[in-house]
Image (cartoon, rainbow, N blue to C red; front, side):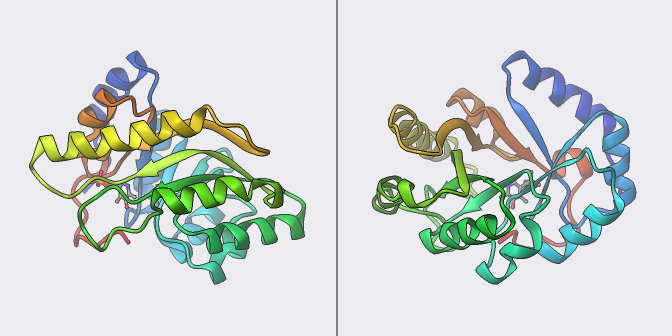
Amino acid sequence: MAFLSINYKKIKDQLSKCNVTLIAVSKTKSVEEILEAYSNGQRDFGENYVQELIKKQEVLPKDIRWHFIGHLQTNKVKDIIRFVHLVQGVDSKKLLQEINKQGKKIGIVVNCLLQMHIAKEETKFGLDETELESIFNAMDSFTNVRICGLMGMATFSSDRDLITNEFQYLRHIFNTYKNKKAPHWQFDILSMGMSSDYTIAIGQNSNMVRIGSLLFGERKKYNNDL
Ligand SMILES: *Cc1c(COP(=O)(O)O)cnc(C)c1O
């Protein structure tokens, strides 16, 4: 299995026409495969597992922008926030509080996306609208995070209408909260779409897609990404 540069060029071409940022999801993939993508010009990479991310970050070029896209446990926050470019999976107020606390300790502002629960599956993490509103109302106390937008995952399904509706719902929430004002509330990024549904996501105004298997080939086991 190797990085598929033909797919990469095709996808990059398609995305640059509509100003969508590509996150190459490299979880379970080797340092060599990441370097291959890097040598093709890719700089934004997404990882789901803290230990794996730390190991890779140590040996890979420092101009890589690492996106943490998995479920982050509060006790792991301090291990990665020094170097992570964007924490995409902030799925609870408690986690945001911990990120804020650790950011304050080392004097940095941590870029975050709030992950919304939009899928039918019970297993997918994320906030509901009440929790989002509660975070929005508490922004005065979040001095060391910057909320850059929203992230969401659609139901894993072949039903394109269902996926479209879920992305449309997220787009609606994004537009609502983009126009609200609070400290450190800088809504620019709507991160939605993966290998199987990114074209649908772009149709719903996604401006950041997270693509793994289309670029690196199938992962050996579907590690359940959570
Ligand atoms: C694994 C993962 C992806 C990429 O999945 P592919 O189907 O391989 O493109 C995107 N987003 C998240 C949150 C993931 O965990």
